[in-house]
Image 1 (cartoon, each protein chain N blue to C red):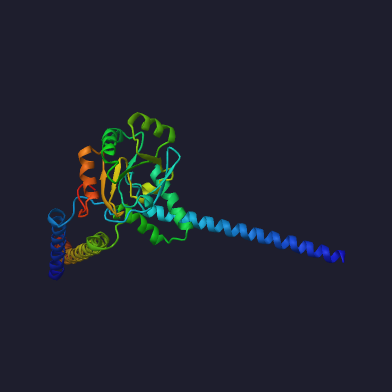
Image 2 (spheres, each protein chain N blue to C red; image 1 turned 180 degrees about the horizontal axis):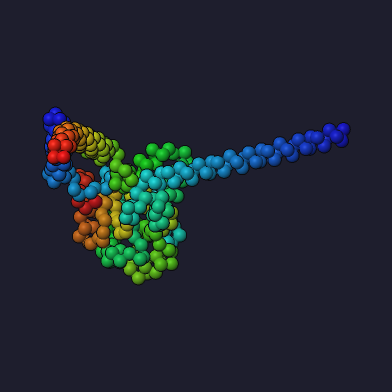
Length: 186
Length: 167
């Protein structure tokens, strides 16, 4: 009976130690708390987007230029917040080897066109009705923006409304050769 | 000659009908199996825009599009493993309904089994202990009852003798 008691005590002690260990790992463990998108650092997958003006744009055709790929929807309030910054930045970068592409998702064409009329978006904008581009780029909400460098590599993913400062920062990285992958904003 | 032609015609019609039915059945089975596979894979993936819902359970537009992409990939001949890897590569491991058993994730898989093992052992020890204690108490009760019974016999005899003496 005494042996059994000792085993029980040892089991309880082991369970407590295990729980304390788990707690310690959760609190002090060397974990990356800031989630990083797995797509950052990968080569951007090619896609063809049908633009609202009827033309088509293929990512592989614009290789050699940095790309700002912005996912938006007409019903999305933060998209409206970032629209002036996108428009102003596009005007600033359009002659600097940068292509802005707007991808409208989970929306209807009429609402999207009305949105563009109201909030600008003179750069390339088109619909992704099957969500193939959005899913292909791991998009889980709007607005989300991906920055692709001149070699076709995804260098950053930004979730949330953009500002001109944020766009300058990421496009600066995408245009420079020695960019690192930024965690914390992905 | 006419009989022969009729027989040939009948044989042709019969063979064509059977072939048509077989093609239909094969197509249906294929479509069924694709749909089942879509359902199976969709249950393994969490919907990125929903709270605690899998891609199979969600009615969101993104989940619907994801199911369509799974179907398209299956029709193109991609395996279940390849399709899951495609989504993990884009959304990370958080898209998986169950964490893969690697690294610290092993604890999630091992801990319930350990809890069952230790819990079961604890209950077994407790039951064993209480059973043996009950057994001991019973033995004690029996050993305590015997002298009283024996004593009462003597008392009865004594009473009888006293009564005889008095009478």
